[in-house]
Length: 114
Image: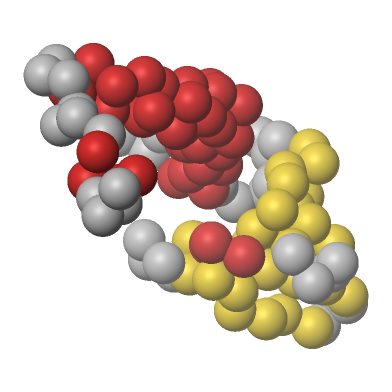
């Protein structure tokens, strides 16, 4: 009569670890789905873009992320290229800002073979 219903209930049954795993299963499933649908394709695209940027050479026609279309006239270093966007107009561009290569240029002539 004086005992409240909360105290009248017994202690929770042993084996609460399996209940915790069942509660975490949806979160693990969501993470796995997100990995395969979002993270993995993103990593593949980044790898392909990095390979494209590393293989830039003189004569390639490229499009920048800003929409400029130009021809690579000089590879300055690992981070920059020089491209011609109009007659007598050359600009230096970061390699990472190149979005696509429209046309590949001629391979550079090997001067050591002559």
